[in-house]
Image 1: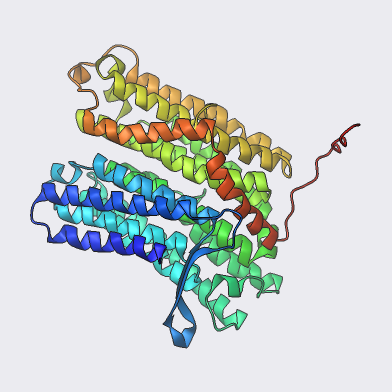
Image 2: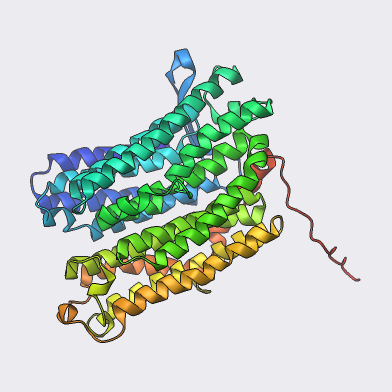
Length: 501
């Protein structure tokens, strides 16, 4: 069965079906059903995946543009699989959370929900593509539905935020397109297939230029400091559901691309630029956290926490140890759940009060204890509290980085302390203290909103205590990636005593 094409096909056909439905309520219900079908199919595919089997799996390969050797080629390894699962889990949650988002602005409900399904298809495609040109097509195509979701359904400054998001992303995409064409020409393989291109560029200087073309595009998409400035505006102006997909999934394409393309296609250049990338990552961790502390807008604060978190992910990728690489991949998944929960609960709060400013709240815990409690769990996950899923990811990144780069790992741990400041301070100012007059009649989470938050909180707890199912899938893929870069884990400083000694 062509699993990956089926997933995308169901989403695209579902989006078309939504536009044909004349009743808004029925359109929303239809979208939710389609997203749940995609989730069920994704889980069924994941069950058949063999972590230690061939790489990639679920292969589909059809000639697309014969003259240039471009193929419609799909397949997944463990890294791509968990990110596709992340996408499939978040979409129905976002659909349910966004039930009244389009109605609030008196805009087309059917268009909004059809855009979500189109975006889902693009997200699955970008992680599944094994042809570099096809990857580029999905990489750029994702911009279209997200641009309209921000620009048509966002806040007061939505047009500015949407255009800024688009221009930054297009600039990075054009750089990558130049690098893709150059890679194809220099390799001389007559193919854009990822497997055919690995190891073909031997000249180190050529690798460096091509690496920069890919890396800058991915650094903008991630976003990695100092390419991050579009994110706070986009996330603050986007509807809560769109912000979840933007930060929870789309931005992961950047760090996924670093791991999949920068390391494997240009291994020597990756090693050359590693000190620079690690420096940018550490700066991003500290900078994002400090700026988050000073924010007065709730959604911008959450956006800046993501700048800090993406610094951890990039650090794990370029530390080039199995522990750090697996931790970075796991962080991509867990960050999607924790930040997704934060954005959605903040969205519920903002929808009730009508303000994104932290100063307009206070004492919400007394009138909406369930909302406050779930907000606290999501916040504690964001600061990597032990027992919640992001702790495992962050711990693996830091310990894996420490094996090779001691000073950056030590500095990066300061970000953990700063995270406690910005999360707990935001919680204290919004949920604790005297109840503000403007929130005294604030309703607690309703049944639909509890169904939105409950799966995310459950996943944060389950993978906090038992991340093994994800790591069993991720570890072999990361080892395979690092082996193609000719990188091995450093030996411990003190030899381990042999058994019996």
